Amino acid sequence: MNVITTTSELRRELAPSRGKDRIALVPTMGCLHEGHLSLIRKARSLADIVVLSIYVNPLQFGPNEDLDAYPRTFEADAARCEAEGVDIIFHPDNLYAAGTPLVSLHVEELDGCLCGASRPGHFDGVATVVSILFNIVQPEIAVFGEKDWQQLTIIRRMVEGLQIPVQIIGSETVREADGLAMSSRNRYLSDSERRKAKYLNRALATMQDLAASGESHAQILLKAAGDFLAEQDITVEYLEIRDAYTLQPARMLQQEHPARAFIAARIGAARLIDNAALDLPIEPSNLIESTEPQEVVPCN
Ligand code: PAF
Picture 1: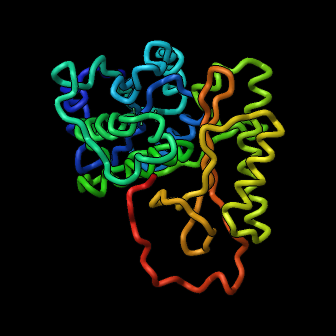
Picture 2: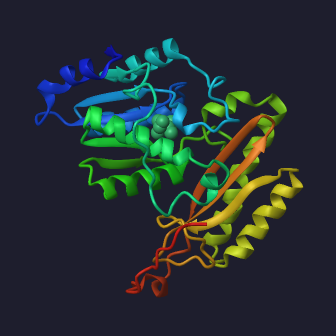
């Protein structure tokens, strides 16, 4: 495994493989956990060369967010990458050629809701750094976790809009035994907060169970999950059901428009997020294909 810190060196290293080997990129900010390892494994199964980038991107942190406190654990990360068969770790000091970014990207329509509503500029920072990484690495494949579903959706839209020739692969959320989604931020939880954190996923599961039993009214699902969370003394930042791809609010679950439930809540010092698909039971009457196109308006 090679650890590379400059763009020129990375380009030189990858040059002989271009057009011959499939290159996969796994972009990360380090502090790797099982969730990241599953992204690496997915990349490994799809490509000949796996590049994992570690870069704590200042552009996606707001003024009151945890940029300085964000855990930097390079030695441990490198050991995990080595064990998983990563070929190259790309670990630049600074990705912005002039010291500060010369260009900022904004992906239309998808960042006014969910995390975008409380983190203005966050997804512009993500889109900007991911597009720079795509330009440097020029991977055929890039793997992102479904836990950050809004991020994944925005990156897909960016790739479509900029016509970047990369296939975006979403990888299923990896969970602790009690359902808590793996996240670098879980390390901020005390023991009692950790026990409480599992209820976020339980709330999503409550909605999934109702949907699976045929309940299609979003309001009813949200009320059940909201009541459950209130019983656990958890105040949410958001609890919403939206179309999985347009991120428009969904009032009814419909077989032909996949919907997801999204949750964010602060438990102690950690702001945790999670999401899950809401699938209705498959009934013959639900299998009729809709021909009506969905209207796309900015998500809010
Ligand atoms: O998901 C993350 O860790 C980051 O947002 C990403 C995609 C590496 C961009 O900095």
